[in-house]
Image (cartoon, rainbow, N blue to C red):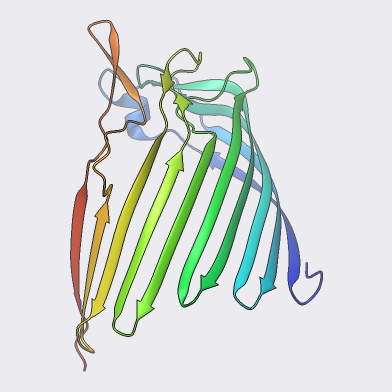
Length: 224
């Protein structure tokens, strides 16, 4: 609903259904054949504002109520919990600075098991991100930074998982009208981090996520 030429608001409602996957049900040692589908209802209020010719702000508040939510326990076996509620706030500011395009985003969520009051497992409650890009004729460059808060590995909230920050770089070159090269470096600083723990010999250890990686893509679009 437009408020004026530069501002509008949207109110949305949706219902969702998620069936357990084959692996959720029958994967050896980790499957749970008793899983039920989960059902959800979501409400969202979004505000979008064109602050100036070079600046735009988008903000949203949302709530999702889930029945029979499918979540992983500490041993990576999917379980149904009676009721869960996820409330959240997200905001993103896009700004142009002397030819540079920037986007600053923040997300704050409260993922809660309504039966126990505990935080849902493996869900970070705060995320901050920054993207910066610029195109110089045939060459483009960009960088991304993301900071993720700590979470809990288990539904009882007894196994904390530390937060982490990641930096990435990207670039592209339009070599000709037919050929484009894209280069991307993820986890530039080669950080060691984990999003989940696993049990072995009575102790818990972090699953190592991918360290520094480089991707090169060449796109050829022949002129016909």
